[in-house]
Length: 260
Ligand SMILES: Cc1cc2nc3c(=O)[nH]c(=O)nc-3n(C[C@H](O)[C@H](O)[C@H](O)COP(=O)(O)OP(=O)(O)OC[C@H]3O[C@@H](n4cnc5c(N)ncnc54)[C@H](O)[C@@H]3O)c2cc1C
View: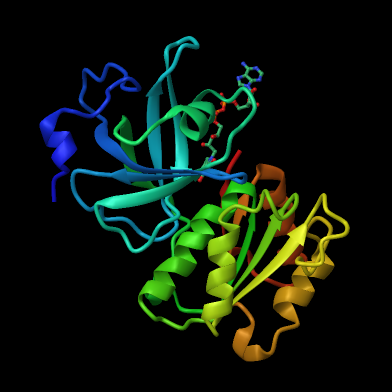
């Protein structure tokens, strides 16, 4: 399927950088939803991509800062794939790409994109139960995995341990809560690292080994994960992998992605 705006040439090209080698695909922004935790952008590609739940795209933008162009990775949080995909962009103070994507782009703008990339992927062939551990923007690929399973009614047990500073900064918080209420096979467990009072989270501290043991390894056998997917800031990924290892989880049962 081809976008009518991409064909008609009425979309804004203000963020496009020179692409002599024609390595970048154009995507049109067809939805912008600015929220506290992250700006949600819906992008329409010329064709539905062959993408696995958990993968990311590179986005390239013309910016004022030298060298005039910046390329960053953004996980698709939507699933299943059609020609429209969704990303959630957190506004990083003084960030070159995130500032533009979170605050400045509008419906009708064209972006240069390339992908999909990444190995933090899950399909029904991988089986379950599945343990998902996410912090910050690392929640986005994990949400895509849960949404993929939900869209296909796969009913594979999945538990997502989600770390954020507080309720307002929890990426995709409303959607995940809705999935938690609706899907008997999905369990959302929250921890808030900067909110000591809010009882909407089960924990109010950083992820630690006791928490991982309680959430995942103390489960009855039918719910204990056979694989773990860990995504977030680099230090969180390293320590979570080590803590899971100390609980007896084999290294090759842990897939991870660093959202540095
Ligand atoms: C696989 C993967 C998936 C990702 N998925 C997502 C996602 O779904 N959503 C999301 O929001 N993010 C995601 N990210 C992060 C994203 O790719 C960007 O890193 C993030 O948006 C920041 O990019 P930026 O260009 O705005 O920041 P940058 O301009 O690179 O700046 C980042 C920080 O560094 C500082 N800085 C920049 N240049 C300098 C300098 N020269 N000296 C000192 N400090 C400097 C800035 O002030 C800022 O605080 C993902 C990353 C990876 C690797």
